[in-house]
Length: 260
Image (cartoon, rainbow, N blue to C red):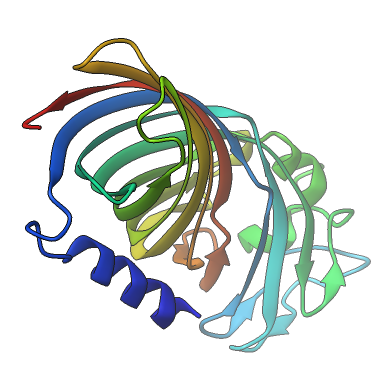
């Protein structure tokens, strides 16, 4: 399915200008980003000796490399911005290159597991390696969200404009590209993750254009974006984690049309 999407976008972007001659455009938008919750999952990358999680996890318990670890992260809503340059063709097709940036703060973490067992109620020393208990549970530490996820993306998009010659023109679109994703998790000031990765990304759009005059138009759209899972290193203990990155966006913007 991913291969088919890439092929379709590439064909639409490379169609000969003589067959689909049209005008160029440049535009920009800002939007409201709704970051989906992430079910983070991973494993210890080397043997890990726990701290004092008595009575649930005795001090000095060894969790061997490969033992699963994970938790759920909820995000607050955030903001997004984008710039796009492209060409509109006589057939009603459009193609564009879009640069976008979005960010969302962490609201909370919950449901921490190790080896398949829930450890939210265990003393937080279990993950710090401390022989002395800290008097606060893992769940209490991670509930204080702190941190964020930021996504810088470059997409090749293809659209179809309905009612192209009218003042009001609905459209659909899809895109494929790359996202550079940076993730910071530091609940209660404890540095757990500060890492990122560049991954494949995809999006689908539904919107409408309102023409102001021969050169300027406004638009509003909903976009659903997702990337491949982002693999990050955990700083607090030796593990890697895959973080999900999906969001819905409501964008409004303007375009300038030229070269017709």
